[in-house]
Length: 153
Image (cartoon, rainbow, N blue to C red; front, side, top):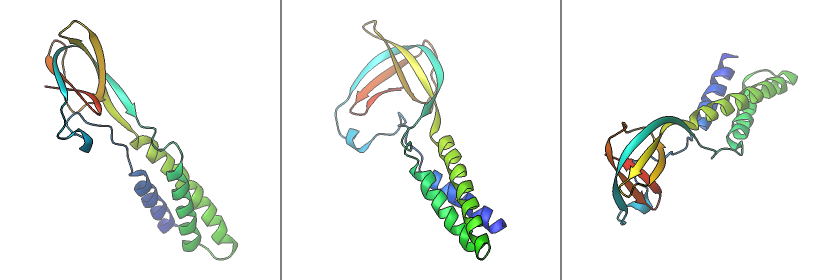
């Protein structure tokens, strides 16, 4: 039984590892490299913490694959005859549920929503991952490129 639970847990973790890329302002995509972007000075008005959620795995494919693999492993490890089918069904169900929860947790990332005042007086809002710290009144750069807007010091 221990081998079954360990196999199910490992499989669920591995299938849930395909997390989303939330696009750090410090990381450039290949199509943004060696291209001209626009930069302008701006002043931070307000910063608010947010949660960024990816919907890239909304199909449930990860859970289905994990459940199927868990069911197969469970039927191979435990029991003979009918016990084999029961253990396969139970481990498949458990693997699917665990995988779904792991995937949901990994699809969320902390972020910030930054309210900015541009030099022309216009107020804009940009959201991004929280790998840089900003404070109201701080002067920053608003960068635009093919992948959107980002804020940096």
